[in-house]
Length: 442
Image (cartoon, rainbow, N blue to C red):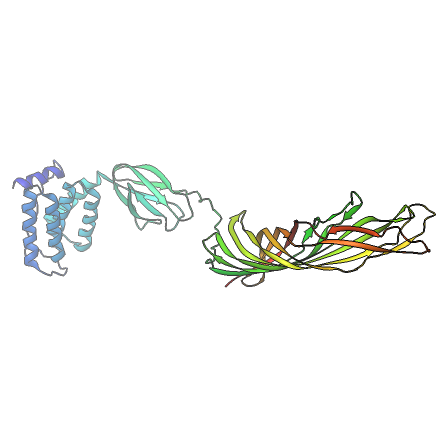
């Protein structure tokens, strides 16, 4: 009886309780009994473990006995061992099970159960967590013990405890509280809403192949032409026209693309030479000459581009280096000659060819950036605003030599005809190309 006396001391100095012997047939529970013989064997094994101070083994044996054949004795033995293991909350829970399964106990077991509850109530209290947060998780001392609202008050050992309350869309709350014996402490729960962060719309899967087509309104400050011996007597307005381009892209990486671009560039610019000089009887006569230049250029070349997100929008930057070629048309006109002196006769200048045409070829470069707008031409066809710079470098534009014939309104004849040369366009020019581009993933 050495182990039995130890259990009695652990329970209370005033309580002399021993482990209960196996139940007789008359003491057996009315609950379903699967194997009474094995249940009795487990109780004996549990007493042996207890006598050897192996409390965990004793608890497992008594629970096995109850699993096979629930009885007052093996249930009370579980309560006794749980209290010896300093697990008072579980011991009280098992006393509740005893009252549920066995409403009427034998007198000796009834006395034992009452004394156990009195002893355990001195070291156990209860807690209720009040808050209007249905489904919030309650974590006490690092253990998940349920949710709000609670089905019943939570039993806890007396002393200080830490609780953490977690709920969706709220910041976690962590606080401490103290449990007193035979009392129910109420913990008020007030959670602060979690800050909301804007969620990015899911980006669609990136397509490997895409195509694009665009239109633009190019503007060229000057086609770069130079008139021989013109000094300050020449002027030119900006060149304007139209740009049509299209191409294909292959997505090499998430941000990098390679492909090809082709297009057609049309530019029109008027250039004026003020004072084509004709010498008559040693006196200079002048006439104004206008050139309307029409540049028709077809171009094509490889393209490399990159896409990136900035400021909530998608930007594309592309670079093209290719070849170009096409006809250059010059419609030349000459105004009525104006004399150097009022007494001088007037005359008309007639160019040898009023609309000369020259073919050219060269190199074209294009650097452009585009921003994806929220609009689409059709589903899957987003519209981009585009701004680019296109460099034109023709290589074989001939020097245009103009010899004007002077038709005088008198019988006078000129000492020499008007004769000057000019390059129709310069060795290089640049064009600003704003416009719209439509993309489509294949």
